[in-house]
Length: 248
Image (cartoon, rainbow, N blue to C red):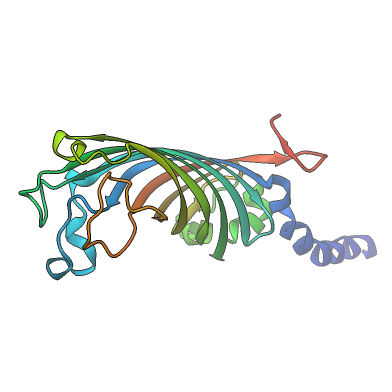
């Protein structure tokens, strides 16, 4: 009788510790995202008096898309470091807004590398479950135990190229450039299995330029801003013996 009691005691003492270390087995994550992009510049949009919180500026005419890939490293259970590469299209037009008679229009191709930090203010409990690590699905009742919520920010660069209509082209502004951007956002992740996550992320980028759409005016009081709303899929890579990602 003493041996079974000893085994049970050891499990009780060291079981929670071993479970708490399960996240270390897969510290690297490869993430792909896709979704719409929204641009807020000096071309298009309504004036502030006609546009509470900028909601009227969100329209199909100003919407395009973006694709991104990311590599994440789990510093600890609540903090991730992330390297991100994004390609996207932004669009600006006076066809809808307070300057319809001006008729400016531009399409902006962007490439954005960024270094981002994520903080998880709500962490799932599934990753600390031994049964989940072995592939046991928590079921419908355990759905909320598999959700993460996080905020992120960082620093990035933006390479952009303009394609303008003739009216905007006559102003002879730069057709391309590079500027710094500050990404800030919020996301949620469903920890679907030990290998895959699915998520949704919304993030804004504040640029250090007011010429992304090829135009600025004397009435402009802020630099250009754009947003991404992305659906993401994550594949978790095993941590190799040397501490790097294992592709086996």
